[in-house]
Image 1 (cartoon, rainbow, N blue to C red):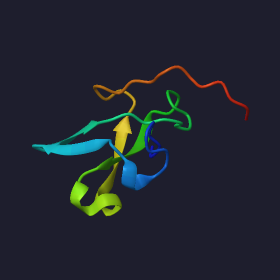
Image 2 (tube, rainbow, N blue to C red):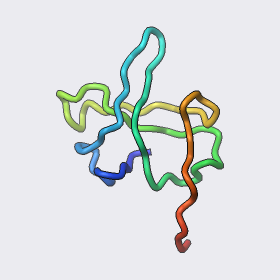
Image 3 (cartoon, helix red, strand yellow):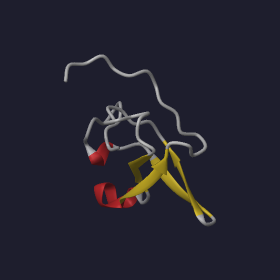
Image 4 (cartoon, rainbow, N blue to C red):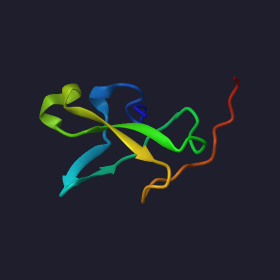
Length: 80
């Protein structure tokens, strides 16, 4: 999941953050236009881990649908 409401697919404009908390990472942000959102059990979520590196400071995380704080909005009506 890369796309965000205010950044689209512009990685340098990403606002979702990931902060290490002991042995875990805490992700905070909103994603949009996710293929199979709510259907899949696992998602790859991109988040900023080092804002000083701009787009090179982005990391990918595997997030489970059942993880605390994960939620899904209503599906978009679209063609295809």
